[in-house]
Length: 156
Image: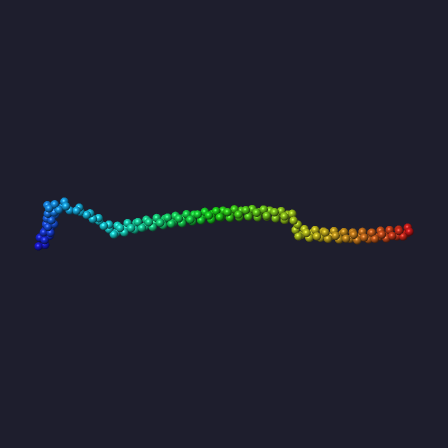
């Protein structure tokens, strides 16, 4: 029975196709609709993953490139500032060297406290000598005045 039924179903199927062909139904029928095969979930997921990774990678690369450019610009700016600071430090160092040279020249030309003390002692000695000579001269002048007065009184 099972075999007969299967045969009948096949027969019916084939007979209906034959009937359709004989009746001209095939000519009048709408063309068959082509059904697309569904893409498997695995292939679709894989394609979505690849598309997502590519998009995320592109956006990440763009962001990284933008950060790289901004970091490079900041680095160039700080290098320029460092260069300017270095030039200022060089100028200050040159000024300090000039001031040191002038200081050395002034030290060589100026007197030390020992020199000043020596000059002070010498000046005191000279002052004492002048004072003693002045006293001697006063004594001589006084003696001359006495002599002049005595001559005056004798001549009068």
